[in-house]
Length: 310
Ligand code: SF4
Ligand code: ZN
Image (cartoon, rainbow, N blue to C red; front, top):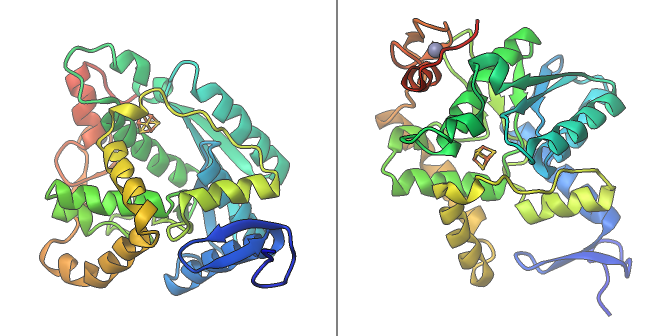
């Protein structure tokens, strides 16, 4: 009979191919918390007194991020708040927003829901009606980052926490290699900072946790999460790369972890020659930090005949 490798409990919830470990629900939750704490400590992601704003979509990754950071909040190590972005994707986003609101209310933390439509006078569904659009995820990512950065300042947050997991991070590393995008590659990591005082440092506490285990964490802890997939998800290059990695992982269960660890080793060398191009000044239109005269959000909006609603 299979029992938990740590405590002998016969109710096993996970068998980890990578390590040969079997774990019961309590030992599994403890192992995830420990691993995240290790990442936070090793990468120096959180300092006592930080105000951390979680980018809370209502999906499993952000809900689990909030749940784990809540243990720091309850011990008065950090202050916690959250932002949820409504891109305007019909039939998809509303449920995530409701779930996010409920979690924030339950924890008693400050929470804002910010809409693309209010910031840019156009939403993602409307953008997708343009003939020569650049692809849903390109706009979504740029506009979302713009809102997150701005909202963090409104909250006076000192850190922004996102739910990026091991699958996301290994995908991002591989994508940037494949696209030859070395300046973007060198910007990846557990902590992203910038010289701009308008930029709030971003942290990824779940960076070493596989997506599957985050899903299991949510189930075991009974956390309500938004499970539906975005209707535009199939349009992304990221998804193609993700599928390749998932396939490889079947025969090589540690491959994502190896990609991450290999990248972390060469990162300092890559950075020396290809530093991330974050900040040269502020965007002349919206004032956000930008590497060009116009930030990417304002560039895209100009193409669409819109502008930031200041
Ligand atoms: Fe946005 Fe693309 Fe993610 Fe959908 S799949 S939420 S469009 S980034
Ligand atoms: Zn701008």
